[in-house]
Image (cartoon, rainbow, N blue to C red; front, side, top):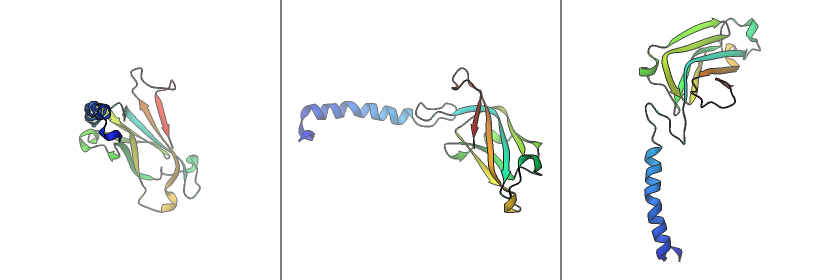
Length: 147
């Protein structure tokens, strides 16, 4: 079979160092993104509630319908080391801004719904990040949007 052919065995032997290199190269770093899993950079993230579970729209809200929100890296919330000096500012009854003193790397976000009445939870919202691009952002805009 193919496994006993000398050429196949040599090819496999040559691919092992490439595989090992790619495995170690893709390990997440504390400060740099990897080529297979790039991180985004920001200093400011905005949560904008558009509608609450009870149908209340942004113009009529008394609160944004969340208890807290933040950024994540590799599916885990950013560590306290990156968030301890961050500030959370209520801009309007439907909008809060999370600001960091220096840029942070992230690839996701999280939120906790309000601890009160579930009908006041945000069900439609935007999470906007003002990205730091250094010429690397696509679509020509420094703002990323997710809902």
